[in-house]
Length: 364
Image 1 (cartoon, rainbow, N blue to C red):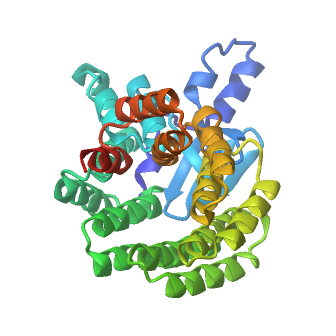
Image 2 (image 1 turned 30 degrees about the vertical axis):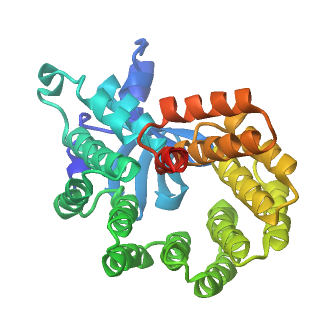
């Protein structure tokens, strides 16, 4: 029996609520007794998670049972989970592994007495994923990060975090230069729903791009985007966006920056104004292409400033923007602004590859 079947209620939460109403009882702690599923669109659903698997979540809500596909889910919050776990998961969603581990360290052992199995699993997930993310961010402890993620996948193969953790495992392998192992980890996503399959193809193209095999990567991105157009709904659009961003990045590195700029601007035009995460990536992508073109430094400054001042919740792209702003401010004779950007980068992201790149450039 799935661990999520052994829940805190002997009958669905909504049935309990209905009975309470019939008896004229008040239910002041209702919101605290429900699980919450936050979708990538920002919508939040409440109820009781009755089943979880790599492909999705079954939620018992006030309107009856509902199946939610995994590619639509951003976060699952279980009722009664420690607040520190919730905070740690929020940091993890921002790819702040070190911060997430710090939050988990605040949980007292007494808070875990009699804790439900799904919350134990969630703790194990956040701890393993945070260890992997911390290693990726710093480039240190990669073997330990790899082991933590792999151990979670072995212990919890039916977790709804399965595909995210397979992607993270591939990322850690790739960071160590283990290309074949990374490709195998990404390949596991081929077993998922259509949008997850497109994600797998995009990740494999990322590997080619990371090896500077840009023509091959470009073909793979274009193939992935073509498949994504056949997927209906928001999940198809998001899957295609990931592939299209990879394609634009390849165009920049193939010396076709003008085409990359046009592609990025087209994606920005169609982007969701509330999707700050992808907007950060798009503006960083646009800024990179503008810098590469050579005569658009002022445009690049605007793009990177937009990341820094508006869409700064995505650490990797924010660090990239700050690095570029240091160089651009220095190039345009704005030393004070360059100093501020450098200080922001070194203070906010001391272990980022962009910070290390900046220090190396200064040392040389």
